[in-house]
Length: 285
Ligand SMILES: Nc1ncnc2c1ncn2[C@@H]1O[C@H](COP(=O)(O)OP(=O)(O)O)[C@@H](O)[C@H]1O
Ligand SMILES: [Mg+2]
Image (cartoon, rainbow, N blue to C red; front, top):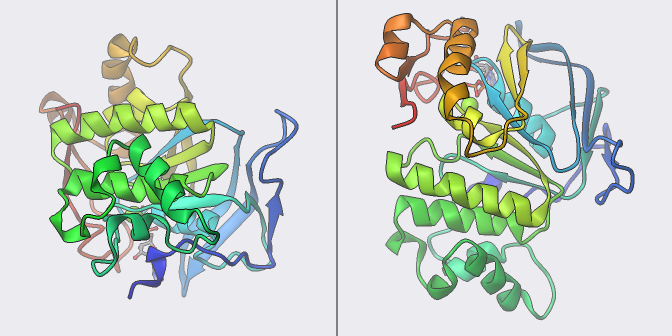
């Protein structure tokens, strides 16, 4: 049905796979040099440099239409990077905002999609246990809640033991309480698997709560970068000033900050779709 429901098996020639399990702590898991992406006359990403270290948790913020999904799809091998200096690991997996489960396949088969070998049901079960769904192995996707479906999508990603986990607004469609639970889950999974994570989000508080480093994509480039060394769980003091600062860069208004609601201005790009125009994210609710 949706080709993107399966994980990319192919790696374009222009993308040179780095080692799936880097031996040197210094060797980045992602390295882009001067990456540019145009759609027709519109340059979405221009001359972008990005490196991500093994095990690093990076959040990517940016207004709608700034090119976040384009960048993520490039790293996933779902978009062309022909002739460009883009290095990503072979072992990588993506989770999108919608879980993209195949409704005619049971939950465990969705997790095992594309896996080979005799023990794939066991592997799927282990991954589902990790996300707290070991009891829903034989459930049909349509019987799951939105949060459960996203947990299945996380299991499907992790069963591949990725060294790079790409998350594109994975919790944006969930209610606030479920989203907070998913934050804990994703941190636990990240700690257990030690993969690098690049998470696109609209939610500044989510970025501050989860990431080692926050990047702001604007005008086709990394417009701002914040490294956070304060341990997670002790960041309450940091959240407010950092939110103000990042929203300033993103063009949020003071009023929006007071309401704890981030209103992103419309993208400068005329062809932004309805999905890109999704107006609000409640931060830190
Ligand atoms: N396949 C495509 N063809 C033409 N334009 C595209 C395509 N994919 C994305 N774009 C355009 O590129 C810009 C960035 O899109 P996207 O990466 O989805 O932004 P974001 O995820 O930050 O909201 C938008 O203007 C979008 O309309
Ligand atoms: Mg997007």
